Length: 420
Ligand code: AMP
Figure 1: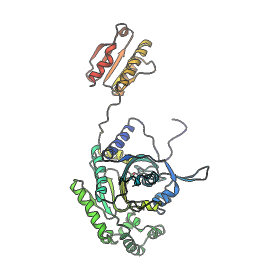
Figure 2: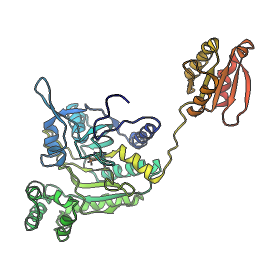
Figure 3: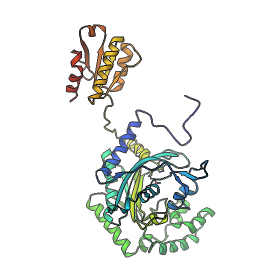
Figure 4: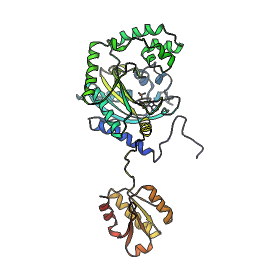
C-alpha cells in the first residue's frame, strides 16, 4: 500500500472484476449502436450554470451534491453530476439538430460525480452509459429507449429487475396539478426543509423516503387525475407499444425522479437484489430542457443506466458473465536464447490476432507455469536449450495436458490452426 488511498466514496476498478464493467458497458451500448445512436463524448466538467439551470436549482444534485470549482481564470465549473444537460449542450453547440435529421440519437459512457453520503451502491464517482434522442416528440421513441434498456439488461442475463413507469404531464397540465398538490401538502405536519420544498418543487415531496412522510401522503392528489388529454393519449401509446413488444412494466404514479427537467414519460429500472439503492437506471422525456438552457424547442427523451449498480445487480443474481479468456497462448522460455526466440513467436502470434502473453523476468519453469495457469491460456509454449538445438518448441494443451514437440518455424501456424 502507498501513503495514499482512493478518495472517500470512490473505488478503483482492478482486474479481474474490472472486466465485468467493460462487459456491462459493451452490453448496454450494443443495442444502441444497432439502433442508430451515434457516440458522443463531452468534457468531464461544464459551466456550473448549465447544471443549475438544466438539472434544477432546487434539486439535491445541484444544491448539495455538485463538485464545484473556480479556475485560476475565474470560471465557475462543476464536475458533471449527470449526462443529459452536457449532451444537449454539445448537440446544440454542434448544431446537430439543424442537419435536418431529427431525432438526433446519441449515446455516451463515462464518469459522473456527486458529493453523496457513500454507502453500498452509492458512490461519489460512478459510471453510466446513457442515451438521448433529441428533437422529436413520438411515443415510439420513448418506447424504443425503454425496450433497448430492457434488451441490454436481458442480454447480460439479468432477470430480477422491474420497470416502473409514470407520466409527469406537460406544461399545460402539470402546473394545475402542482397547485393542487401544494395546497394539500401545506396542511401536513412536515419539517422546515420539506416545507420549503413544497414551494420550490412539490412533486419531489412525493419521493420522500421517510415512513412518517409517506404515511401522510396516502390521500395526496394523483397526477394521473390531472393529466390533459394529449398527455393521457401519449402515455397510453407508450404503454401499448411496450406491451406489444412484450416488455413488462409497472405503473408507478409516485415516480417523480430527482431531476427537474422531466415531462411526460418517466421511468426507472429497479433491481430487487440491491437493498436501498435499488435504481439501476432511469430516464424520461425532457421536452423543456433545451429552452431552459437557451436553445430552441426540442422535445427529447433519454436514459442513463448505472454501470456500478448493474455490476452489483449481476453479482446479486449470481450471474456469471461469459467473459472471453484474455490470453490464448502463454510462452515460457527457459534460458536467454529461448527468451529471444519465444518473444519473437509471441510477437508473431499477436500480429496474427492471437492473444498471447509471455513469462517476463527470466523466471524458472515452476513459477512461469503457475502464471500460465493463472492466465487462463489454452496453450503454453515451452522451449529450453535442448529444444532449440532440435529446432522445436514444446506445445502443451492446458485442457488435456497433452504435450508435443512442434517445429519452431511452424509453431505460430499450428496454434492459429488449433485455435481456429
Ligand atoms: P440518475 O441520474 O440519478 O437518475 O441516475 C441514473 C443511474 O445512475 C441510477 O439509476 C444509478 O444506477 C446510477 N447512479 C446515480 N447516482 C449514483 C451514485 N451516487 N453511485 C452509483 N450509481 C449512481
